[in-house]
Image (cartoon, rainbow, N blue to C red; front, side, top):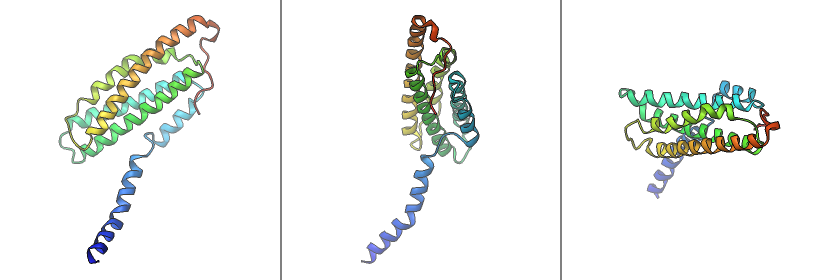
Length: 178
């Protein structure tokens, strides 16, 4: 009976830490200022895509910096957080691209820059040395980077074809995601 009480006490003491850790891992990858910027460009697809690309690039830069900073005590934890933010941002960008594609919004201008940028993201994710703290998150991020790269290239081809056939629709924004 005494062991059961000790076990229950340990579970009760550790559960808030576990819940807090889970809640932090599920937080929005954007800060309040970035969220406001995304909302501001809701009706301008090209600018919104470029904004997401900028935010993703900031996370990639942070990942590169953390991978070279061997002295940081919390490097592995920070690395995992930045990698997870990268993955969530890529997922959000993909959702936006799907929406714009479905509405036939002309995003060719943004895609022209996004194609070469997205090709570089995967290389940055393999740069950090292996670490069990972030290896799974990195594997997921590498898959997301490959997926966005493929999606952007396909969408670019589809857009070129669509707007060649529907010249009157060129330059239109669609309604965009909210």
